[in-house]
Image (tube, rainbow, N blue to C red; front, side):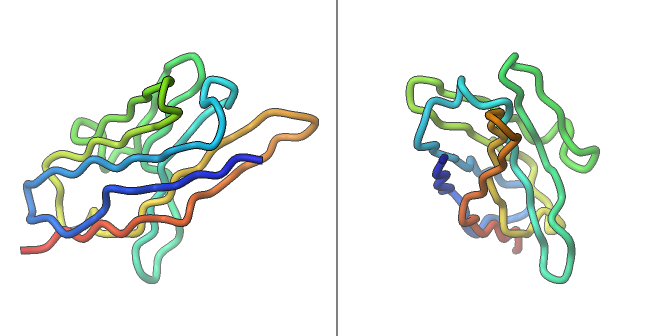
Length: 118
């Protein structure tokens, strides 16, 4: 079982920056991957960025070049640095962890709201 707690959301003006944190209840090194998803009102949840346990990363086309994902293994925390934010980035952002055991298991955090508005 893995608990995930997101933080760092808020209201920011277009062009601004935010850093989201996802704190895990166990070592993130033991996980296959940790990812950030977002869900805007009335839309489906979509992948924003992911980091695998080998350190490789991938990003959605809409955020590539503006967002970065990183880890602090000592703190079991994954960060999403969001720069040059746009109104279309407004959404609830969720952390997701993939754990490989007897079966592949996925865990979700409770989400954190990001609003980009002037």
